[in-house]
Image 1 (tube, rainbow, N blue to C red):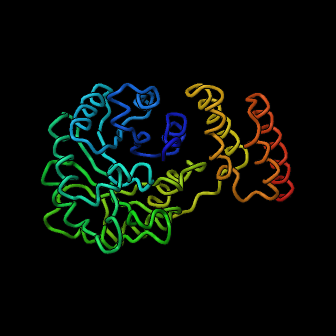
Image 2 (image 1 turned 180 degrees about the horizontal axis):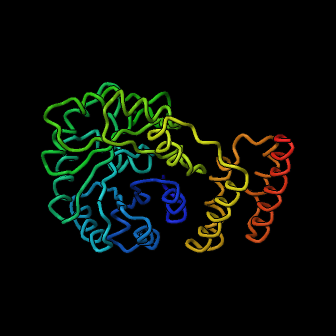
Length: 315
């Protein structure tokens, strides 16, 4: 969720019912060197709480020093990312790269736990590849050194985001009598029906949602409503979609500056307006224009156009 789960995005998710959020992951090397981009990611706001700050790294001293810096930002949780599969992270033995060296993973985690008064949690994957799935051992050892919860993505690093996430191993960990910390499942949850099915089948304490929320923060409200009532909420209207996109763009520019705010917003438009007929014309306007005023005007025209389409369909 790099360049995605920032304050403008998180604000929308919170309004739509997300119970717990995490920042973008932050490089500990950037953090201890006071790199602007890394330090900016420490920005959290009261309306986002409870929130966790997520860090990644591979060096013991850097992880410990970063934990002290994170504590000063006063999140509810410090989360360690041992799951990112991206090559530039993995090649430094950070993220999912650490799955190649479980003893080192445990040592780093224990050092962070001892370096902070914050609850420490971990996000990871099943293993490095299908031949080295040791998540059962990892869960026990990380629990033993003091983590308070474990989130597991149901793929190996080798899989990246391909194929279907396998929650079977996650379910086995929940059944392990030695495990007493909360276990959260992650991977491929993109509907209320699937969220309920996987929660019931695998017995997880909670579900983490990442990619399915990009441009679609309503997924949290939809899932919670389905859990409570068994009913599927109507899809958001074009007015709700445009209002969310407009707010997101406005806050993105305010927080990141005009150029970066406009550019990093582009990945969200596809999902905000997915399924609308002939949306390619409007999407092209939104992802090629750098002028904020013109972008807001495009959103206004898009809303006017599709609201008329919806009215005609209902007539």
